[in-house]
Image 1 (cartoon, rainbow, N blue to C red):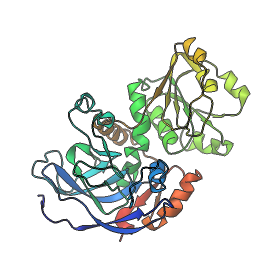
Image 2 (image 1 turned 90 degrees about the horizontal axis):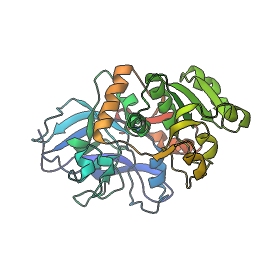
Image 3 (image 1 turned 90 degrees about the vertical axis):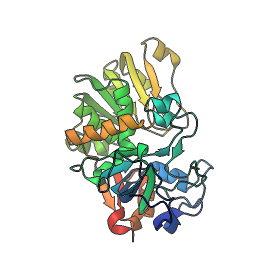
Image 4 (image 1 turned 180 degrees about the vertical axis):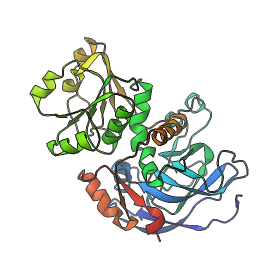
Length: 355
């Protein structure tokens, strides 16, 4: 049961300034409260958000920054009021670790849209005044509501990327009913998010087309990921041949690009969902109006849909394509991530490399 007094020191890797360079860092976690779960972290996925806040891209980084919000591990301690987890359980933690638990969105299991006090997993002030520190660390203490059960037969290394990359595409897919077999899905961009959208699309029974600027990705997209079609985004002839043929499109690209060519691919009442963060979105309103088309935005999901996604992946044997690395390679991994040199998600082996 919980030890409500002194904590053991936590070992992590942190950035001390906007250079973003990570190095070993010792710090303390809060004591395990009555509703808390203490988790020995075994794996942590590497997300572009780790680049953003270690390098102060938004001007709000609070150093030292311990990044990481795709966390998988094993319960090592629980508070006296915890009823959904026990010591030894496999669990995950995603992009947020607290919310008001009282607003309409929290009450509806959409905690990520909390209007009062959503607390991100790292680089945010928690309710006790401390700054949250993420999964590039040996353990973490989290309220049980924001922990997710990972089935014992699902590899923890594979589970980590589901907590951000996976849920970022799964949540809008189920919200917009993209799980209808026989429908057509376009996926723009083939990175960490895009490759998961392809996997979910195929599991849902959709006909999946990948749109990418990189012809070099074609063979892998069709053979390894199982996409039905690969289209080079700049090939105007291919794009025009597919006009009004898609029920859904998920846009994972973060570079500025015109949406008009993709909106033209939607059927009447089709839906395009943005999950990337380009600095601006360019489109012609008329192209929406004339076909009753919809552009929607989305981020990660609430606790209910996140657990649903994990269970769906376990049941359908859906696994992210990962490159497992030691914590000592984290700086190089972030540089490679910036260059899009990863297929398709780095996962840090915390358990065996963080010493």
